[in-house]
Length: 182
Ligand SMILES: [Fe+2]
Ligand SMILES: [Fe+2]
Image (cartoon, helix red, strand yellow):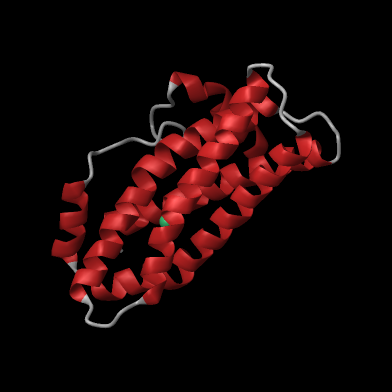
């Protein structure tokens, strides 16, 4: 498997961890219990920085290359590319709601819960389609020079939470994840 595909699979595992955190704390919001809003906020700052700015663009280059090499129209690629835009908007909206709560502004509990749950469900569905259809297709179609081309389109960017160096702003989130996995 190419380094790019290994990274994409690893990103999916890490994003799944983030979605589990959101799900747990959204349940607390729904059940009128104490939810860790700061933690959810950190998750969404991460989601709108690393996955939205590195993971999805990298996939877009992969899918673009597959389309260039395939004479068959693979509908799934259009679907996942469109979803990247939708997920980015949904994530931004949810993050902005959390920004308001952290700032002490009023946000309706139901609206926060509904935006967050929709985001979690949409992203899980999206990753499942990529894992089951889009990634296997890319692996069948792309060759070493294609993967090298994708790599050449991307700036080397470390994951600020799961990478070797944890960014200062994500130290609490990283600690929480480590504690949960122990
Ligand atoms: Fe994607
Ligand atoms: Fe993905």
